[in-house]
Image 1 (spheres, rainbow, N blue to C red):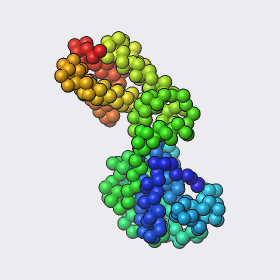
Image 2: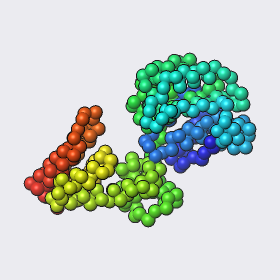
Image 3: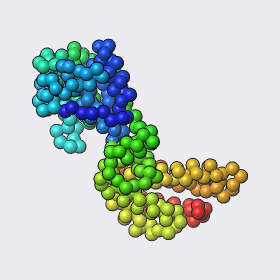
Length: 325
């Protein structure tokens, strides 16, 4: 499928263009970055350019040649995509073995063959070992693109044989500008900036948030947390409310909120004992949040209801002894 580039992808694209112009395209690319930066779209853009029979001056696919038409129709014989057969499942070793067999064939339409594996971190040990053999003996005129949001989960032996194309999130100003032009919302810039923070700066994740119920959730959690710091909530009722949401998302939001309070407190701290005391409280709360995140993220069988209730009570005890308002 022919795609267009997003603004935060242009610098990496220019790097690839230079390699194309010099005929120094690596045989394996690792496209990484947080969710919401359109990694798959970027990889598809690379594929279209590599397979195109009549690239433009900026190395983008022409969109009109026979190769581009086949790719856009999803029937290009020189392009293969490998992904889990079922959502949430792993890429099987049979899929990689079949890929290795097809790798032996010569291109039939384009001068190159292209392969996308996504998400690459969904391979099990056997699949990874099979892919490693392919990377150790690369075929001529073949580009293999691995896509992952979690490169830390890939074996170092695989990562070391790929050129890393890491997509960075745009600056807050750039992201807000893009969102203002490409999303239909009536949120103020401050709320949008907070959502971007929660989305790790990824604009497309923010768009998904606005299309769902995450905005309402965000505003509710923000209100709940402010009341919690004032000891004005019922721990059992609040825990039940938060358990309806994704806990990691809630806890990440709390972490960002307490960090913002800490930054503001530090800026007001010189010769101010009250602000100094507040900052000490915020650090204690931050430690509590980090501890809960680790427990929720662990593989242990944790009772989330008791965990969140205990967390809320702990924070209220801290603020009750050392008021923050």
